[in-house]
Image 1: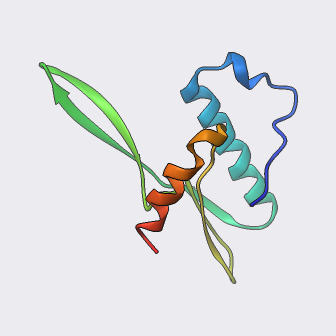
Image 2 (image 1 turned 90 degrees about the vertical axis):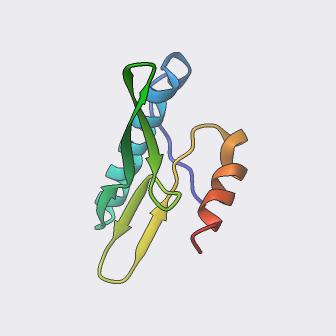
Length: 96
């Protein structure tokens, strides 16, 4: 497992959603630079609660990105907080 350097952006001042989106986009560019075709594997679902709609997001197959080249298919789960690695690993393990 490798980690990426996020540069001079101060991730602590960003919202959780913004920090996650930034990390996913940075990781996507990383794999594209390695020659992979990359797609985001997040599914958006609309839920009706109390007469209003709420959009929920779910990762497909427990991963944020699916990276593919002629030799490999890689499922990537991007995390900015080390505390949440174990639950994400258990979610991904359901699919293998």
